[in-house]
Image (cartoon, chains in turn green, red):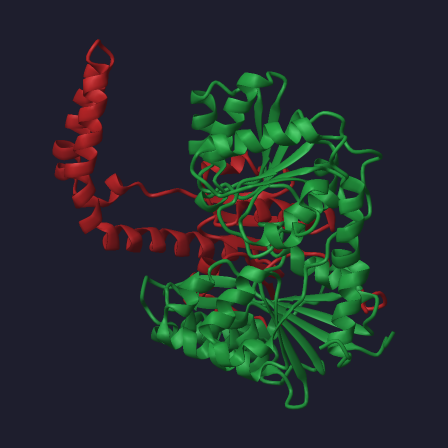
Length: 402
Length: 179
């Protein structure tokens, strides 16, 4: 191991006291690799929206001057995972839907936070190409290697804007390594930029395999969903399917972890469906609490329409909990070859009976014809902190697998 | 030290509750200037924190008295009375329709005026809090805190270069342990 590594991580998402789960996978990456680094600095470029809608930042030069002055005098190195140092960089952005303005703002405010100097680290790993990726490229020292990972579920909206698309292509060309967390992103970017498809590689998010339950559950009564309460996650579909399952298996309960703009509507739907006693909304859950939550339920259920990577699916199996998940892209890839051991997949379909049928089939098969410990071991070999950290070190040190 | 958190829109209430508590735990005298918000019941501030609340300006406060009386208070009051009887469903629907079709457009037209009024009240409150508490450390806790600070902070920084400013109050890296 090369403990001389000096690394800067640049990211638009990182947990903070307001949203403790935002960018938890970046924090996990930091924790995983910190043991192999002599120094690791995280630059969190959190977007701070200012001004009236459509008004450019330059329209308020006094604000720009003040923020520049504040960044210079407000440098506070904060403690974060694995002994790394966290630098919060409030990134003033206009209320503008053009991604290129957010990209420019990210580069600008990182430069100001650094006092005009380049990032000191010779290895820079950024997350989200259009914002922090661009900021990293524009602020890295000339001899630094810049690696970038794409995770975002909003990539289509970026690529439909011509200027943002051109910026994205430039990032893809300039990066020393360009990574995606799952097949859906790989296929999307390769289709958009076929001449650069060879530049795209896989790099997983690390998952904590530290605390599994003692044995897989014998019955699948206590369901759990860990998902934002938004349209893409289809919690309304889950509630209806759960109600139909509960008509057949009255002992079922459902815990919904996560929050979002549909919280009130989904609470009303649960009441309308007569599920008040069976469904519990627990709100947002801190990342460190997720393994315990997974281990205290019998079945992890995921109904998302589309995912770039199946983090929560791996987390569930890491905790030893069988899964019932939609074929939403990321989950298919994660479970390839271990579908029947891990639980049951079902198609993304608007008919709740699709989930009901999948549950009943899994209930028939479990536990005799599932093998959650085997699925867990298979995933551990791909996604554990140790495995993913080693992959990072290979990349950063110019390893042979690249 | 006297640490003043400036949160004129109370945008990030959960963080405000957590960080002010951490500052108080660290032995600081913690002050907050923030806008009233009912969701502070979900993320209450620590009792050790002294707060200057900025009152919310309702749309009605920005309209002329006659408009307020004729188009807001009288019709809505009448519908409220009706709503206490058997016609409550009809009265509720009529009140919603009145708000949407009559008051909505008026509020939309007056929005810039209303925003200016709110901005002035927030700025005045922040200035008053800074003058009253003379903080050693100012935490500009949300984007609007920086926007409002344009009108008062540069002058204060010139006068008091030792004033500490940050954007949050979180655990600092220990130089001995940082990797």
